Length: 427
Image 1 (cartoon, rainbow, N blue to C red):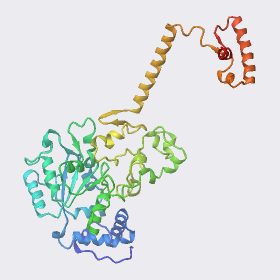
Image 2 (cartoon, rainbow, N blue to C red; image 1 turned 180 degrees about the vertical axis):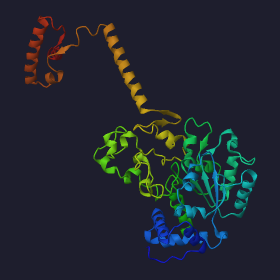
Image 3 (cartoon, rainbow, N blue to C red; image 1 turned 30 degrees about the horizontal axis):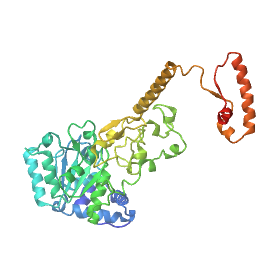
Image 4 (cartoon, one colour; image 1 turned 45 degrees about the horizontal axis):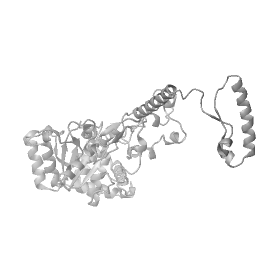
């Protein structure tokens, strides 16, 4: 792969050289992107060529991108731009024609909105939406240049070739849609579906989303001229088809029953499994252990923190997003929900236990009040079943028990009525 000659356009070649990125590093990165979109690493030259084609010899050939923000912390944007040194992913993303970005643009208000409208009029663009869609207050919470945020999204999504919902907030509302959700926030996919917009939506989850996932989706679109195969949640299937638990480096400790039960313990120092302290890896479908973060240097569990499940998204059910479903983060039990009603298993266990104890206490008081506890229950010397089936041995044992019981009765130790099933049957 590394020895295969790849001819790059002057613009990309110059950009790589200016950032100190060698061709070998560039092809290695392209091989990783190829693997994420389901191709062999041998396809790295084709990935490189696709990037070169979109970047081209002149700026006029760049792929237009409109990057909008809803209710967000800008964390997904920050994960792209706040790198300690320019890397391949940063280089590629910077060379896309991001015609509109509320965080990075120097302009604002009406002048910036004009750039968005010009891009929409020209067409052939990709819409990236970061953050949740706020439907509350009739969409006025995110008004820009006199236009409602919800209207701006519908207008931009209608003519886009594709919409990339970047980050968990854009996928299903995330933090913004957490209970009690006064803003009536939800994800992009549901909002567009409810408003009859049929533009395809690709959900890229996590808080924030990994830059390499976004790059892989864009590259596949440029390379193959099609969107990635999606799963039932509209996520790229090849990137989100295995759980974190499947690829976790601590999986061996899980299999051996070696867990961390308290932070700062000896078990934590040994790198044992974090499942007992709330790791949501078994229920989170992302490839974080493989792709990692910060140029594949580390990720949450490798850094010693349990997975909080920020990659769990429910696009059509904003009230069941990862923030609500996975809390409390550092405990193993989860809340469960029926419709809009939500409760904790621990709380239910306490309620059920209290009800059972109260029922037993009431029953005991009732037995005492009716004097049914005096003398106890009737004593059977022989079971009715044994009498019916003429079990002689059982009758002998019954006679012995009857004799012993009589001795206890004579000493005043027991005072119970004796029931003779044999006499009842004969009677």
